[in-house]
Length: 99
Image (tube, rainbow, N blue to C red; front, side):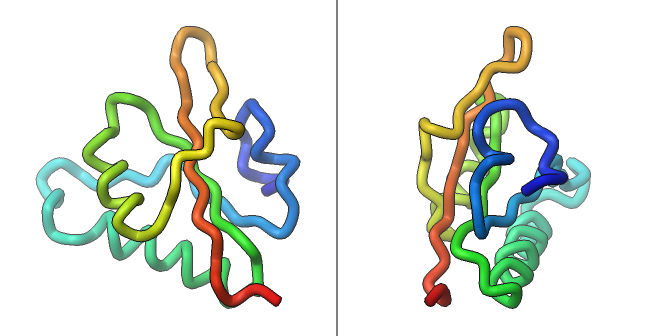
């Protein structure tokens, strides 16, 4: 999380992973690429034995929210922050492989 590079509290989270700026070219959307990329990030976090994955999104990306929520991410208002006039909304996935 030290390289996550966001405002707010996310970079202070312990035993956590995150990804930012995940995007799929509009011509390739609907083919499962976003889900594949997200699952790869989750897999890497699990392989490292981390306890959670943290991401942020904006209101303009609500289509992606459905995918994130279908993968188990939950809205986490404690991670929300503002960057100038744009709200960034936090999501958290608790991983089951932690000890």
